[in-house]
Image (cartoon, rainbow, N blue to C red):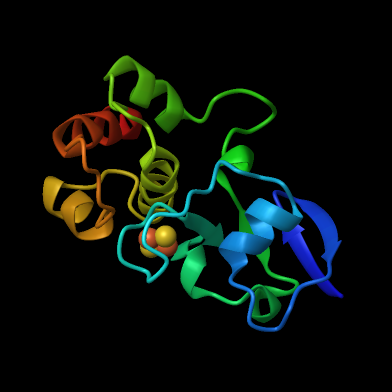
Amino acid sequence: MTSLIVNGRAVEIDVDPDTPLLWAIREQIGLTGTKYGCGIGQCGACTVHIDGVAVRSCSVLAADVAGKAITTIEGLAENAAQHRLQRAWIDHDVPQCGYCQSGMLMAAAALLAEKPHPSDQDIDEAISNICRCGTFQQAREAIHAAAK
Ligand code: FES
């Protein structure tokens, strides 16, 4: 058994040693907000936080993050209220198809935790997530709005 701490809750799961965290989160724990895109650490759809750092969960083994604090999009909102980034995302109509957005939000949240007032360059460097709808400019505007 592997002990994970997901969104502040301890969970015990039975996973193979080579199971990526992404699949443990989606299939074992049932939190499907974290998405599968490429599976090779390129697209960012699977981004979660591990001890507050944005990490691509397809490229991390579940067994390697036992005991660390894992936050998924389901845990981003505090006390059932939307995170300020989620409100800004809605206000700025960022999502189009929506598939990549949970990963992008998690990357943005990690950026704001590290840099409360990021520049465009900071955003472009931190948010390397791929969005096929091309929502990058709206996301940039929403991050600046959430940073105010
Ligand atoms: Fe993990 Fe694309 S699914 S980076």
